[in-house]
Amino acid sequence: MQTLVAEGKARLGALVGFISLIWLSEVVDQLLLGGSLDRLGIRPREASWLWGIVLAPFLHGGFAHLIANTAPLFVLGWLVILRQSLDFFLVTAIVTLLGGLGVWLFARPGTIHVGASGVVFGYLGYLLVRAWRERSPTAVILALVAGFLYGGALWGVLPTRSGISWEGHLFGFAGGGVAARFLTGKKVTPLPPLAAARLR
Image (cartoon, rainbow, N blue to C red; front, side, top):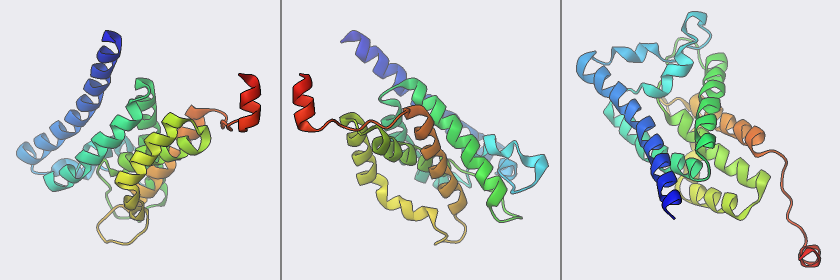
């Protein structure tokens, strides 16, 4: 029991630490640098700004933007890290790199993309695709919770609102699906009830 509690605290600490780092970046940017760090985000097809792929999740267009991302980042991040800490770090890295690369390759030129919403959509994509591939009770329950809470946000992958990086949402979600594909392994198909009974 004590081991489980300790593991839970460690995972919560990792998640809170990640979100705190994002908040720290925005506090420094807004209070000390006048929002100038936003120019370091993803600039599509500008080779000299490739490193914006890594920096973009830590940059936001103001506190309102950051606040809007914080709750889903925490909730979905917790659903990802709940099973295994390593999954959280790997999914975050894969989503950041693949999702950011997708934005860099395909987003509109002359734009700058910042924010952790791509990571949020990546977590959602990971949870949903993992449940579809794995089909274990735990994966399905986590996916149902994620879908119930944030399934409506999937409309964000479409260009329905100006000033919103729908490309970041789309490629972040796709990056989460890719992460699930590689981290889940082979799809688990439940045994028919009769076959399962015979194995008992």
